[in-house]
Amino acid sequence: MSNLELLKLLSNHNGISGFESTLNEIIIPYFEKYADKVTIDKLGNIIALKKGSSSGESPKIMIAAHMDEIGLMVNDIEENGFLRFTSVGGIDPRTILGQEVIVHGKEDLFGVIGAKPPHLQDANEQNKAIKMKDMTIDIGLDCAKVKELVKIGDSITINRSLIELKNNRVAGKALDDRAGVVAMFECLKELSNLNHEADIYFVATVQEEVSMAGAITSTYRINPDIGIAVDVGFGTTPELDKADSLDLGKGPGITLGGNIHPGLRKKLVSTANEYNIPHQMEITVGPTGTDARAIQITREGIPALVLSIPLRYMHTSVELIDVVDIKHTGKLLAFFIKEISNENLEGLLCY
Image 1 (cartoon, rainbow, N blue to C red):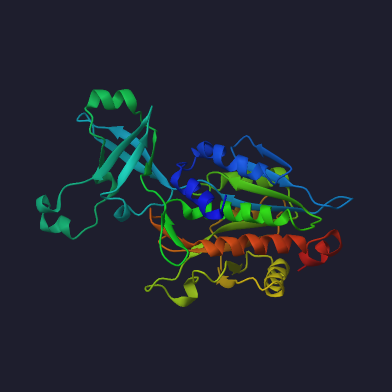
Image 2 (cartoon, rainbow, N blue to C red):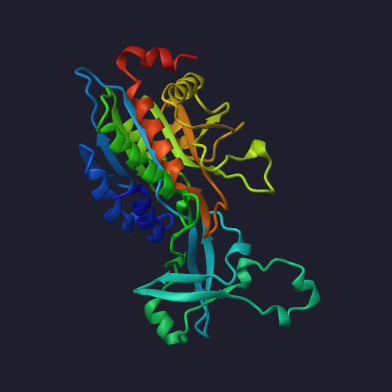
């Protein structure tokens, strides 16, 4: 199956933070094709181990991409059958009004998000964005039936299917960061044709959008020598400054900043140049806002890197990427891993 087909499966599937286990049935069979061992830890992270060729103690490299998505949650049921809801993860309320949704109750229920019509708003209301607390979800049922099928705490996702645009571009929900999960799979495939000394732990992490808990616990368990987060970065659009964004189709962004290990970053850049893999620079002066932050400060500290797949319209249901960037990201990861050995590891980790 192609990367695009896997991406479509993952994007169309539902799994907001804390409810990711529904994705296991997709991810695990794919990872099992190339990994030596696949496990699920107590928090729900999927960990795929690809063993290295070292005859002694192997370096350990952890690659993390989160599989959770932002979404909504039922927090009240009105007497007229309408649902009130709150957000799970960072959602701009302006992007959800009028959207079709799926309420994951005892069964999946289609609904729509509505609010007071503009015709009935006063002048003051018309000049303000509608707040989430003033929106409701209508699933077309009376209160008794709603309470039979839905309970407070049920998750809600936007009803959206991945669409293919021109020029290798696709748009859909949850590409942040299921594109990263597909990039890990691409790396895993690539490594099947390469000799590498290091043991590689591919982790599809949970709850990144709300707490980074999955990265914290899995890093503690694995205790890697190197940790790499594969996430998304802000794709270039007309309103963004060039310095704050990444061009689609030109490879992943290699993050540069105080939280990134300088020796490893230089090695990653030199690897990209040596193998002619397209890449860009992404500057992040503080914590990256990715699983790399959790990786970096676990135990006594883990040297960390971030690779960012360019993505437009982040945290909406029409996130947009170039699938070629996924391939470049996976290839760069694989060839970087190939270059890590017991012989050069200590030198790379020195400041």
